[in-house]
Image 1: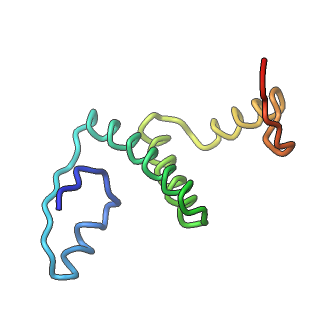
Image 2: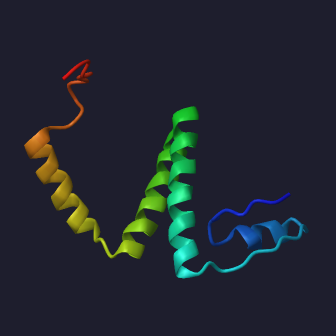
Length: 100
């Protein structure tokens, strides 16, 4: 089976432990960035299909990798999130904008 997708670091090892074979390569910087954003999209689709803590954890793992890649600290994200929340609000009121 052909995958051509970014997987967690231990996946080749886990496949081999099942006495199966696999081939893989280490992504270049450019390929890693592209595949990481593709993985975020994939994980978001999985969360929509199966809403559970495991899928949320997968998205957070991908976001952690994106932050590291892009040089964005968790503290920076927290500050920006708070500023946006104060300026624009959150989603607690469940407002659906129909027209503007």
